[in-house]
Image (cartoon, rainbow, N blue to C red; front, side, top):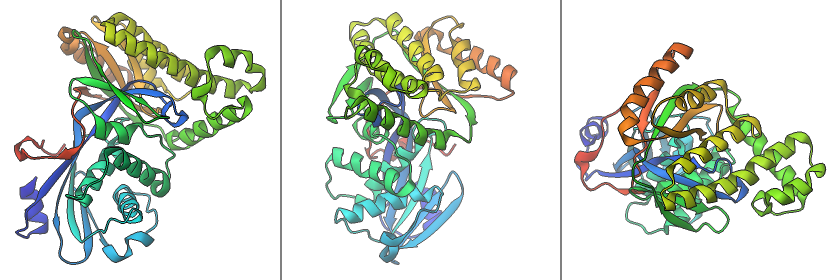
Length: 383
């Protein structure tokens, strides 16, 4: 990666590399922007940003994946507008750093990522966090403030009303464990995963066009539910309370609220099952989560439903569900470790026959959160 950096930018300055992982969410979907509970893991898949001073008062940003170079005058960063492209995530972060009083100096940035874009594994948050670290260098910032800064970049500059989960887990990830996040208090606890289990992400290789607009619609629908129920957020609603007040909601808003309320319960049950080593119960909860997303929240699609349904027919599978915003992207499947190879082969063959697409399949290996990479030999090659 440093050789690529030198070929592109030249110079003799020390090149530093920062890493931020993508994530998969084991359970707790669309609950983060409703101030509820989520249970993600940071992945070994990550975005890497190599950086050194540019010396010309410009921010040069190169995406190795896309083969595209952008250059911006540092003096004009604060006035830049949304360009509807990949560089928006970096510029949004730079603007938030400026608002906090961090100066941005001219720099060269080379971006390499192993997180597939549009797969629901949070490539955007990985880019935001790794870019923020590369622009900060050795200047201190509290980890939670960094997560909130990157969330603001996506909400304010990119225009996606995301919750905090993706940026949070990219920073607070733990090796060999999931992290339960309370999206109201922003506290967390580490949740060890039981032995005899593995998680596998299957990329459907599709992303339907309505994904962005439907995400915003769900945010608005949840806000309508909270207003009708007279609560701060759906986090404050129990299943009993929702049932008793169902007549105050339209059928669509009721279904949206029911998903959020029951999904928060499922996160709590899943965590307890994990702590007790009850793998079968964890798998059942994953399937319940998918059915709720499929029928009540209506953010699944035929390809994701096929991947879940087919996975449940394969030997050694505990459970499966869509993960991420929906309308394409990935499923996450809980499998016995000895069954991973057979599952990978069977699901890929079935999906190719049904949809004429070859899915990308990745083991979900829980990793540490973001930071500077010291052992530069560990950087994966471009994908």
